Image (cartoon, rainbow, N blue to C red; front, side, top):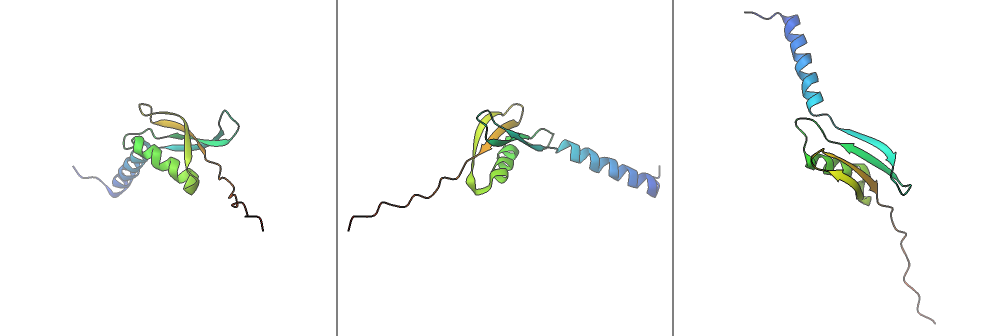
Length: 96
C-alpha cells in the first residue's frame, strides 16, 4: 500500500493538529474575588501536568510572583493573582 504525497501531507497536518490539541492549555485574564486582576490557567491535555500550570503561572506574573486563589491538581486548573509590588520604604533618618 502506497500513500501519495497529498495524502501524506494531509496525514501530517492531522497528526500535528491532534498533538496540539493534546497539549492544549489556556491562560485567560479575569478578576479574582477581591477585585485584583488575575488569570485562570487550564493545563488539561494529554501531555500537560500540574507542573505545566505552575510554570505558566510563574510566566504570567514574572518576577512579582503570584498567589494561588484556587487550584485543583486533579482538574489541572488554577486561578491566580499576581502579587502587587510593595513600595520601597526609605529607612527613617536619624535626627541631626
